[in-house]
Length: 232
Length: 232
DNA sequence: CGTTGTATCATACGAACGTATGAATGATAC
DNA sequence: GTATCATTCATACGTTCGTATGATACAACG
Image 1: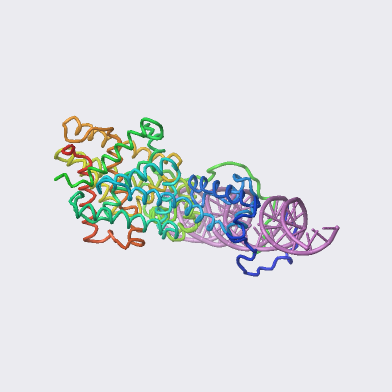
Image 2: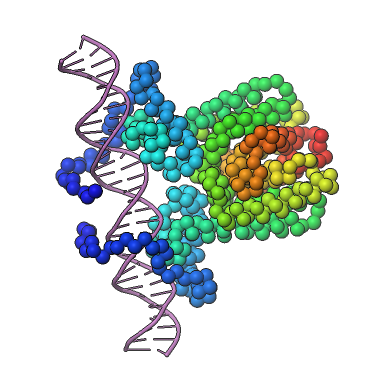
């Protein structure tokens, strides 16, 4: 494959987003045209981003996995980064809903906090690629993308308020509420996050049946004890 | 700068590591020849790998930051991956030493476990780029490089034994020791890891003076309560 | 029928990547 | 002074990346 093209035909016209992308409204209910492709791209992108990171998951790999053309990402999302943000948005939204539901439940403040921990545990168990995903964002050191920032703010605000309520009722130990939120959330996140090396390196697989249930109980018990005020 | 070389001189001879690299013994005490370059490369690589990840930190960026020539990494380490492993090795070694020292201290098993948590906290506070580093490895999902695997095994084994001893003495709650190790370690790791977004997004900066001390006390108290058997 | 516009396709561009190569450089040994 | 050899340097190779481009396919509508 030698380079035989004529060099005169290419003019760098520095314009961005020149192709007319369909807006959400346009695509909303126009039958099957492109909708399946968009969905397949998001599914493949989510898996590959989680497995290989943002840089590691090439557009070629994503479109190949999704059975779409190389240009599909640019066409449907505008850029690789926009696809990434869309994947993140779809990933954090249900977690936020779960937490909100756990906070609205009955029981003491500590019980409800356990519900939050369990919500994380359940959500991450159901979507094991998600913690990698979020941690990759955090580990990158840069400001998280808007959807993640928004979810962080919302969840930490809600759970902070719960902790504060528990402290006022004497059910939760004194201390900065935000620090308790971090300690609570660190339990399920860290456990799910190290599942893979835990199995590979230390030979303990918490991803299946009985061991997973045991791990869940441990996480909840540890968090409850760390939170509870019934302790010196 | 056109391509004017003769195309006949290039023969793809599929051989690897063709250049005679100096062994560790050779370089050990040969004055200042190259030693400073090697050190500078490791320092720059550590920072840039932590900031941008493995793929994000290019050899050009590393050598540029270190004031070395583009070919320096290939010459001194053989490949980018080998430099990465060397950086990882130097990063986890002192942590392992700290943990070993904490385990050898006086006090109850719970006190010594707190020493381990504090060792993590101190080490990561001193080297804030390290958790990102390790988590990038974990988040990647692949098997960790040999130096990290070895450290994981050593530390988890030692701390597991401590937990088991505490359980036999009735000082630590019942449960799988490895799960307690994870819960303990998750506290300082997660806290240090989210320092940046914690400051950026939630406006709480635990990286300086008073707030850091408060965060350390919280982490220790939470871990102690989660571990201790003096609790229902 | 033809027109219109969304979607898909093959292909190319320019940039950045890790690595290879061979020529300078400079200290040490004789 | 000259030979030796570890190191540094400029530069090139081949690959892969994200994106751009223009042709093509095809359903909807007159």
